[in-house]
Length: 222
Ligand code: SAH
Image 1 (cartoon, rainbow, N blue to C red):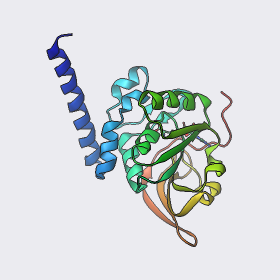
Image 2 (image 1 turned 120 degrees about the vertical axis):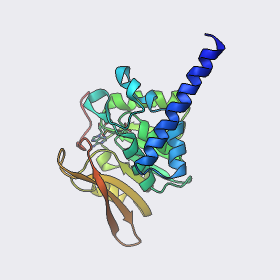
Image 3 (image 1 turned 180 degrees about the vertical axis):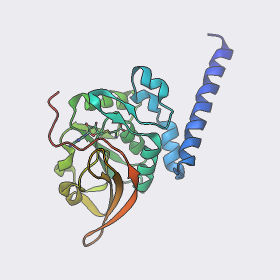
C-alpha cells in the first residue's frame, strides 16, 4: 500500500470518529470523559459481518442470540447518568456485545458484566482481550439476581428492561450508589429510571423513554 493510501485511511477513521462524537453531543451526551471513552472504544469491534459497517450510525443493531447492541447515544446517556468515578466498582446486567461494558471499563476501576447467553459472554470476552481491557470480568449468570459475592456495587447498570427494579440489585447497591435501569413491560413504553440509594431508602427519578429487549429469568439453554 502506498504511503498516501495509509494517510487517507487514517484521515477517514479520524473523520468518522469526529462525526460519531459530534452526533453523540447533539443527542445530549455532553460529559467530556464519557465522550472520550466512546471515542476510544471502537463500536465496530463488537459487531459482525454487514453490521460492522454500520457501527458508527446512532442505531441499535442485531448481535448473536437474537439480541441487540444498544444505540450509541443511549449508551452515552446511560453512562453519563451513572456519574462514574475512577474508584468505582460497577455491575452491568446484560453484556450483549460487550460494548457498554468496554465504555464503562474506561471510566471505572472494575466492571462485572453478566449475560444469560454463554455465547455472548464468550464473544465479548474475546473482544475485551483484543482491546486490552483487563478490568472487566464477564460471567454467564441470571443478572436479575446480581452477583452477591461481589456486592456491594457503587454503580449498577441494567441494559434489559425489567418490570420493576429487581430487588436483589437494589439490595446489592452501596449506600450513595446509583443504579440505571429501563423499566416497563416489554415492547410497550419503557422509561429509564435512576435509583439512588440513600442512607435510608431509595430515591427514584425518571430520565427518558427508551426501548430495550426484556430482562428474562434464568440462564439461556444455548
Ligand atoms: N449492553 C449490551 C446490550 C444488551 S442487550 C451491549 O452493549 O451490547 C440485553 C442483553 O441482556 C441481552 O444480551 C440479553 O441476553 C441480556 N439479558 C436478558 N435477561 C438477562 C438476565 N436475567 N441476566 C443477564 N442477562 C440478561
